[in-house]
Figure 1 (cartoon, rainbow, N blue to C red):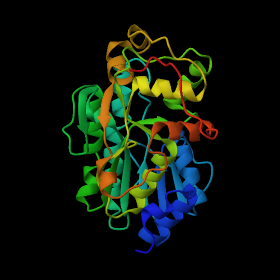
Figure 2: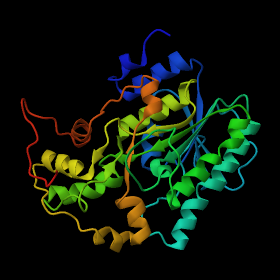
Figure 3: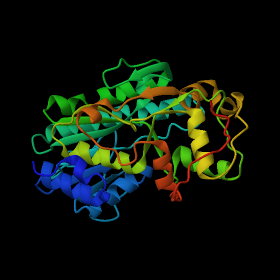
Length: 340
């Protein structure tokens, strides 16, 4: 195959995508993307376009230009995927917020039925459609499995999010039965200052108000945004990759280590732990258990077996890169952060 994947891992992402396309899928690709306006979708569609791919954004509002098509999630038009080589399905309501009955219904309804309908439509587009790649989540393993190492072969867990994610992944079955290569990207806690966890924590830690959550022993399975985009690129172009893929860094950390690392990079203390009742006030008991207090030691075994190389496999390097804080010569983090 010429170049090996590891030889381009340090190249800019658009160059990596060009290599993926040339080596693994040399023909030009037209990729349809749902959720293109979200945090991950915005970065991914920009990257795909920069890499020379033709991107069609599937949008629920009226299209504004030729690069968009109107997508009705519960009843997609028969010609929606005409001329499309691959689908990346990212759309779904945010899980952030209290787990009220209405919010839980929105989380479920925005994922399972739309994915099933899109997979059914994809099945009618085989064999022209080569890949059906969908977002998924490590929530499938349940909120607390102790120190158990969780791989793609591990049994699913219990709880609301585990039920939703299992149904979400099962909804891709029509595409798989039609012979289309399907990939479910089980995403961990995405790290980027543009959104999600890091965007919420950064101002608190910068002000010296950050701290571990409770006893800080919860495992955090995280992934840097650049690495996540790279995984999606591979999912689209690597014909050997199919089924569930854990999109997490290979080195999970405990909450106490995460807070110590972030505080150290910002040269701030992180001595006052957040009491357990704090997340419950914001998210309710169920939401706090499934989101804020979740503890999952997830391993990206499928990617490791495939020889995948991560750009930022350890947390300090990832946070330094994302926050633009490169260390001075010989500098190390030494901050009292209440970690074990």
